[in-house]
Image 1 (spheres, one colour):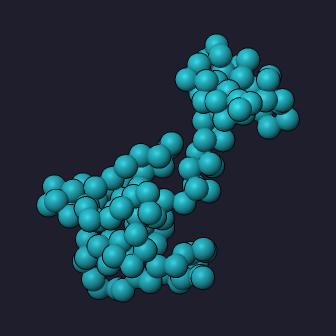
Image 2: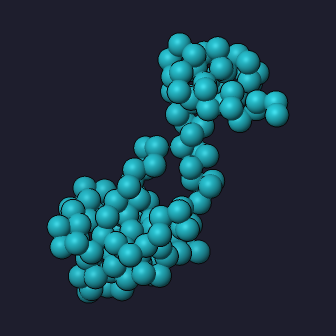
Length: 137
């Protein structure tokens, strides 16, 4: 879905922004409708800067209405009553995991053995996790 806001076309956005409404109220509305959402998507949907959205989220956290969680490099925001695991997509977690692997020097064309060898030096906890995933039973 595309959204036209302040003369800008916003791609891949399922949010509808109601003009003239308090941004905090709009954030709460989106969270009720969509569940946990990455902070950058809220900024994009409302046409505000990332910093401005962070301020509104901080304010809502102080009021006890929302909380945030960091998954990889992304911060998600949800209503206090939300069940994170019921709403966070596996694709988002896997994308962050792949980015994490690449920061440790793992390349997509490496074999699993090569990747584990690289991770042994830089991130042994991840190497151990990969070993357990492919362990013969």
